[in-house]
Length: 135
Image (tube, rainbow, N blue to C red; front, top):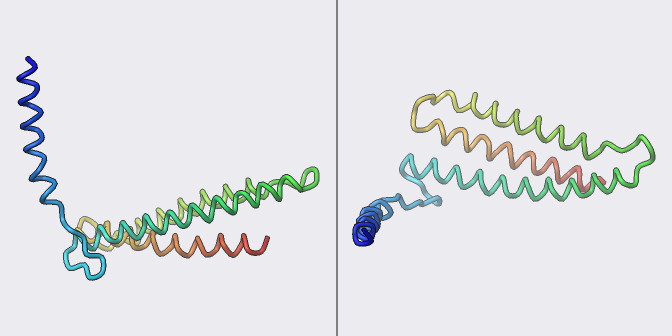
């Protein structure tokens, strides 16, 4: 029984190697294939999202501190920010889905969606930073 399990593991490992070797290499400096363009757009979105999350968390610290210093019945800055951010995420996702629909069903649709989300995310990061700078 141990030998059967061992052989199954060996065969599974062997069959995995070609799949890994066939993964496309990304060239985000000059993408030529649609899969590269889509994957690079996804990387750009991930990077923009990381920046947005960092700025958002920094702003939340400020709004919580402002709320802690507010007089009775004056707190609510942080709650308003969270509500606004959730609404913005819903807007971004819906708008970019609609924007990408121009290529609906095609291989370019996910690329358009990711590019749209990355662009709006960068703009939102700037908005959050501007608010933080004014506090």
